[in-house]
Amino acid sequence: MTQTDTSKDVIKYVVFDFDGTLANTMDAILDIATNEVGEISDEDYEAMRHEGIKGVIKRFNIPLWELPKVIAQFSSVLTKREDIKLYPHIIELMDKLTANSFKLGVLSSNSEENIKKVLDRHSILEKFDFIYSQSSLFGKDKVMKRMCKKHNILPSEIIYVGDEDRDINACKKVNIKCIAVTYGFNSRERLAKLEPDFIADSTMEIADIVLSLNK
Ligand SMILES: [Mg+2]
Image (cartoon, rainbow, N blue to C red):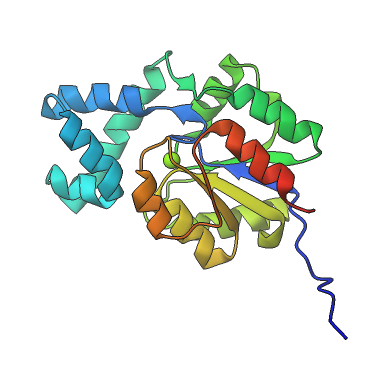
């Protein structure tokens, strides 16, 4: 007799990272970086996508003690920008997910004010059940745990969508399923190495993956 697995997880929430996943902040970040350290070459850009945030810190010799200052600088300039765009088809993606009864959330280290402003400008803020914002450069797993506690959600009820190595690592630590998107800050190769549950090369692929869950 074969045993049937009755403990199959039902995914109820799709929680998104913000920068590099919902919002294309890369262009603005490159702009700011160009002002700070000079022109970023294509080679530097590709290396950054390949090396992740720790590689960027090394490449530009940012001392760790200066990191909070650099991040604060970037976010204060980013806050003032009115031209942050969402990636293509994000609005359709949100429509599709909510039409299929998934609840939506954002978990990001960007400020709640920034996130709300961008989502509101694109008229999709009301689609989200919650925005959970907390600074977490190397501790996103802890933030994920706090988010689950605050909103009374089990890790097994979530699929997280993120664009960086640290998103995948955090999800693995707290047993949250993860979709890695390859159009954001990290290269496909870098993400694939960490073996996320799923890889999506476009926003509409995210929809296909999520809609195939719970079947
Ligand atoms: Mg990101």
